[in-house]
Length: 80
Ligand SMILES: [Zn+2]
Image (cartoon, rainbow, N blue to C red; front, side):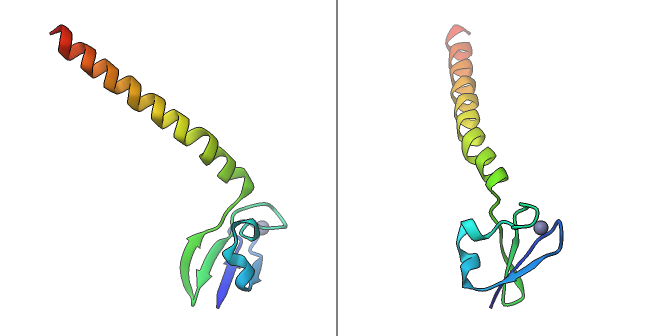
């Protein structure tokens, strides 16, 4: 039994379609649903708004910070 609950407006949805990310956002307010399976929280739902931010910003920022930090450390060690 799969149940999706909206943390914002409290709407509840049921059914296997909740397994798919495109069905895991609330049609009323667009918030990501919390997906419960057999009464337990199975996963945080998918919202088009939050998902876009994560996929676009996180990887590029993390990669830049990592390479910058590594280069800085290497240069400092070489000089001293
Ligand atoms: Zn909602």
